[in-house]
Amino acid sequence: MEISSLLSAGLGAYQAGQQRIETAAEALANIARPVAERSQAVTEVVELTEQLVQMKVGEHTASAGVRMLQTADEVMGTLINTIA
Image (cartoon, rainbow, N blue to C red; front, side, top):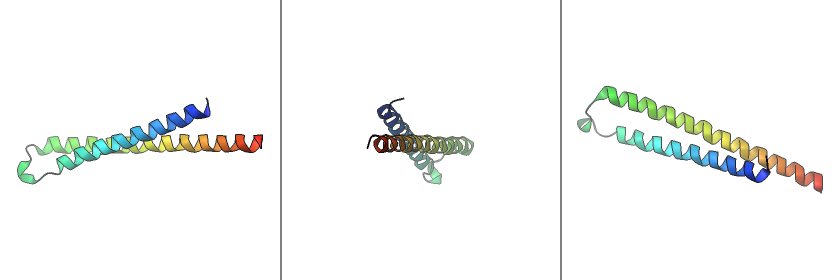
């Protein structure tokens, strides 16, 4: 795999994870509206659980992206040191 494609894949994974977390956080904020506006508590618990799971998936996706970026950085550093 080329370093540039590893960098692209890492950045894409990080951004995808970040987007997933932001979307889940927005949904969680909508669930937390005042009690008078709530209609079904059971549905909200299921939705709350789903959004928390989505946040965790986003966290892992972003972490994987960061690890790919770190690996590309290390490989690039090794290549520079080898050439120099």
